[in-house]
Image (tube, rainbow, N blue to C red; front, top):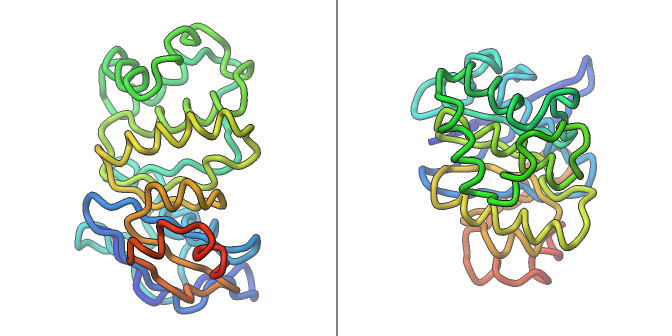
Length: 229
């Protein structure tokens, strides 16, 4: 489904990604792990069109997408949820979903039903200003907004970052439900989520993928994953 093939990415003259390759197959949930500054966010931004690789290629469903705009990739079925948790704070949850539904030409009620299906608690917040939501609720809204229009691939950056433990459990459950419906590539530091949900793990260090793990016995043991980070 997604194939990143030997890409280099720079900020100005500073190279950040070095010869990075990975593949996420149809129906898989892949995770990228690594320390801060390893290049994880840069990799996601390069895939989604926010950064342009200096070399290498990115293929989605067999077609090259390097250099395409984020808007074009969104319409092609790739959605990105950044780590900043940016919502339209002055609009209600319903209005946030309405914007996404309009862009995807999907009925608003269909979009609302999908979000509530993943997170029933959101129903009581539909008429709440998004700026008043908790961090966890904003994260759910962002993921729900990304699901409007039936995307085929989600890219999610640090979905549990800065959230309380009790909220992380909710996010875990939502991600488990997502796994049944859409392929995903997720940057995540919470190794408990990784070993619960990952089909494939990519370990990044200093702008390179230094290890790819698809052995269930390795991914199901948090201590083994910690040894690679």
